[in-house]
Amino acid sequence: MSDLLERLRDRGWRLTAQRRVVAEVLDGDHVHYTADEVHARAADRLPEIARATVYNTLSELVALGEVLEVSTDGRAKRYDPNARHTHQHLVCSRCGTIRDVHPTGDPLAALPEQERYGFAIAEATVTYRGVCPNCNDS
Image (cartoon, rainbow, N blue to C red):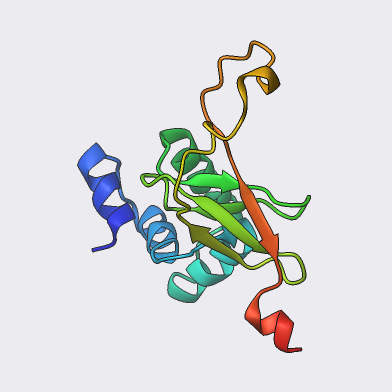
């Protein structure tokens, strides 16, 4: 069973066939699908699943804190099931591929006190950008 399915089951979230297939699609490392990609993959497994059901399920998963909504460079929102482990993202500036990365160090500590302007900072999100090996070869 996937980590996401297990977490949802532990929460007592009702796993209908549609919800289950969406969670199964989101299973895996470095998963960052758009809602349309989730729908296409879910429809391969459950042809009658409606696009609205996928969107609603993704919204519920985000509201539960079980899936992160990731936006990079004005591209379509992507959904990341790696919500339980602190991580940052590495994004290809050509094709948009996203990878989860776990840099060492605390990004909050990297911001000097005089640059905080009195803010009580709760979190920092760092996005690394570059060109992936597939795009670099072409």
